[in-house]
Image 1 (spheres, rainbow, N blue to C red):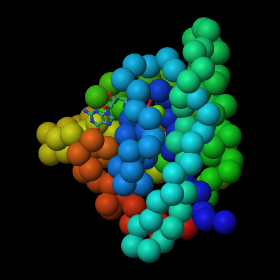
Image 2 (cartoon, rainbow, N blue to C red):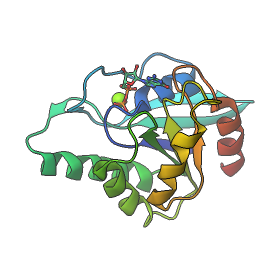
Image 3 (cartoon, helix red, strand yellow):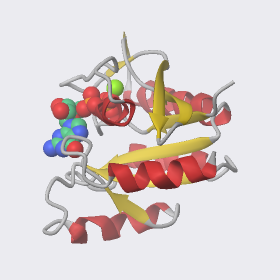
Length: 165
Ligand code: GDP
Ligand code: MG
């Protein structure tokens, strides 16, 4: 079986956009609005001949309340992280740290797997470095700036991810 790289985080941070970028496909569904959730989806990926499976989380069932909402994000993240070899935790650098991020982060601390904290939507990396610092508060090590849209930071990320597989 190929190693598994799980992409987790609250809705709308750009997980599906990142999966499409990393897998070089368009089959992860990108949602324009938040508040939708769906099961995990699996995408074949290859970096320098190293094959792995990317798992996207989040998608179609409408959720009822904020509590159910964050519990569900956390549960999906946990289920995906448990089956993964490497976890990519995505947060939104254009928004900053949210309670949902903190809730997922607390859960991920208990998962003893290699983890990358990815601060997405930093489309202008030279101008937006200061956006990174607040994500140290999640207690998951050094935040890495990326732009799933533009591909900034994703090649270096893949080099490091495959070195963990
Ligand atoms: P998901 O819910 O975490 O899977 O997020 P999606 O991949 O569906 O993206 C949510 C929204 O964020 C979409 O409108 C994307 O186009 C946008 N988005 C994703 N990545 C980036 C990025 O790097 N920069 C910017 N500016 N927007 C992004
Ligand atoms: Mg998605």
